[in-house]
Image (tube, rainbow, N blue to C red; front, side, top):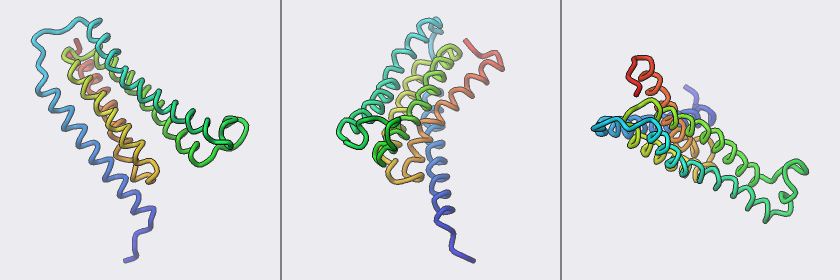
Length: 180
């Protein structure tokens, strides 16, 4: 049997990292949902307000990614004029890719958190866990980005899967009439 290609090896490492992130997500969110038994349902306005306040930490990650691109451009003769003037350096292309992914993830997370707050009665602890997983995922994605797909896969998935599972939980609650 022939040696697996570098591409296949990288695919396996990415798949393993993503499976690990999914497992962590399920364990964390499952534990929070199992422990969080609200004595009474908070009014929807209070839940939405809590989610918006918690999502300040999502906005901070987005601001950090924007600031990183601006910082890198400011100190680079090649990049200071902007991407419409010249092709960016490798450093700027990488920072731009991190920013683009952070924008995508932040939009999904913000929507997911608001939908969870509007749908699930005991959502505050869940929102805190979702925001925490987002922050840890962004940190690991950013730190691992320079190491290629397998280096950023766990962080990507730890940012993405919580939002998707939160949306699925909300959809199930709506479909079965469990929504608050």
